[in-house]
Image 1 (cartoon, helix red, strand yellow):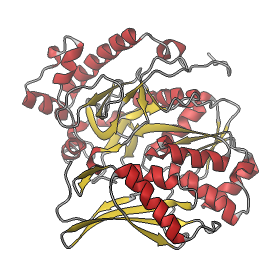
Image 2 (tube, one colour; image 1 turned 135 degrees about the horizontal axis):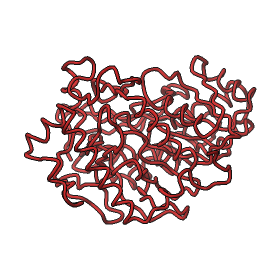
Image 3 (cartoon, helix red, strand yellow; image 1 turned 90 degrees about the vertical axis):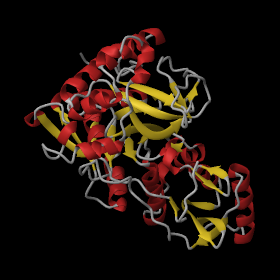
Image 4 (cartoon, one colour; image 1 turned 60 degrees about the vertical axis):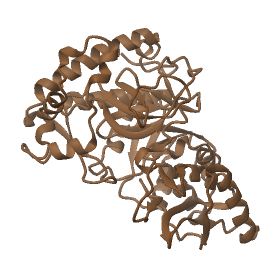
Length: 448
């Protein structure tokens, strides 16, 4: 049945279920996928048998925490076996696999991801919730700038856009300037891109086309791939440059599109609770966190993905629970979205340091260009934290004053001192997708 353009929710029943009913549905789905994985996956059977766990042990909600957590490395080891390339992770006959994708490999050997046709339909439906919540409708012409390749995000966004009725324009083989010209030519109304590339496109638009990005009349931008769209200063920069709303969305190849921002922009992300169980656990003890505003590590289960299940997957990401959104969805909110990764948090001079905190300061300093790079290294017995930035060419403030002001703001935000180096404008890379902005060069790297 065709959905009405004015309909607020993609699935009004599931998106507004009372929390108690959501929990009942989630427990039923959780039991089903655990039973499936134990019966069909050598990886999960081995993991559960080694821990002394059986699916029949799941009798109440609290028993979920008895289920062993799976790590990305578990997938990598299991996929070293036959049948190639999925090995012991595969739960269906190899002939049933219709979609191949893989992780980006930014944290090591890529994980290969098989999906059946049913799994791929699940992907499109899950993403339809996201797009509808962000105002995507049949009237939209959506421009996707990347070459889709073997990674997941653009494929999922493409097919889900078609599902909600949008017209899709793939711009993969074009360069940035050509993509902007195509957006202008076709009067695209929406863009899907990483925050870094949204910023790069705005910079190219002004520099190469001598045009303000707002003149392209983009009505909405969906961001994924980096936490930037949930960093207030980065979101503000993008929205001001394009004169439009920017929405965050979080996905992982192994998991799915598990959290998204709606048009109410509640300062956080809705967990897509009809499709996923998202837990927050204490970083040190693993104990569940249900209270608001307490940071924890994100553990995720995908309920309806059968070729390669993802059950209690350790994402390494950090967030906290927030207050409900005014949009009427009963799905829980992750306040501030994803705050960073556990494996990126380190101790420098005895202080716990999250590199993402620097992005908030840099992007909130109007005299600075958008890109930056961080490194920490040893100089003798001292640990030195270096921030490399660029000053915008059109600002008149002298560099020493700007450096002093920036150092003070960084000190207030992180309780650390930085060595600030100014590079010539345009020196730092302007990436299209993910980028590594922090490197730890210490031989004895700090621990949490």
